[in-house]
Image (tube, rainbow, N blue to C red; front, side, top):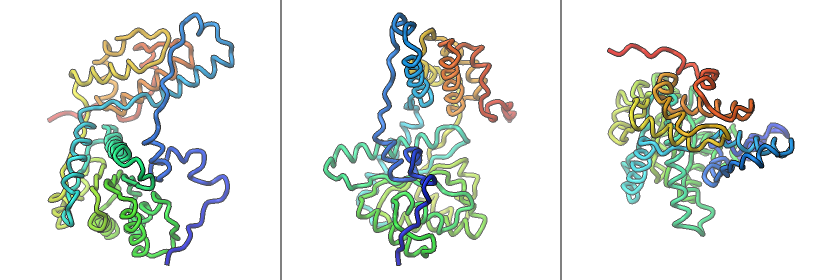
Length: 343
């Protein structure tokens, strides 16, 4: 029996003001897919310097908002994940069993979630373009694995994404049946599962949660793509369960950028997206070696550093990013730690 899920009280609604940021809900996911952020134009200096205080504040807020997100750079890893995912969807299109999947694995802050979400966004955009009248379709489902996940927690994550009216007291069989029914009706073609490293297959609950994901992959005629930190080391691919997964999943490995042309091109793309009045183009690309040392080549750390410096440049009125400005930004702990010695 399926019961109505009790909603949080007023002021506690997770789909409220910040609901658009929750990719693990259908509303949040669709917000990501349909979002086309406006890129603010830089005003001519004569107009900019003469802005009234309130108009300047609005203008600065728009630029701060832009710098807080910047652009998604199509890195080689993102392109590889998108290409592999689209190919697997075609391979699985007419498969009744034994469908193949993909894993995205690597250290933290190397772009795994970005690659996963960009794949999902690409698949959804293609589906909408090919089937413009199928507004009720949900071609992509996105969930994250909770810490210390159990089978029921996995099932509830799926139910939460689809906003199914399921009581937390419901049994897992009812929840799974409801989820599978919705995915069939909604023509789901891709299931994106993030934070897979939270599955601890060394415990009974973790092993059973892994089995639950496998069960869903067999019941749902879609391509499953997993992402997580160093999945090869989690035990997910060991033992009988691991052999089954390894036999059906390919893997794209993410990692830090080397100090090469790709790194410089990435910095150049980010620099080109800046909206600062006094920033000299080429300043950041000339600091490519410094930026690599500061971030260890991690794209997540690079984005943190440049976004922070750009926001500071608007707030303090300097309107430019220099090495001194970058030095003043406290980046994440990982990028501030010394690199482990190589053997």
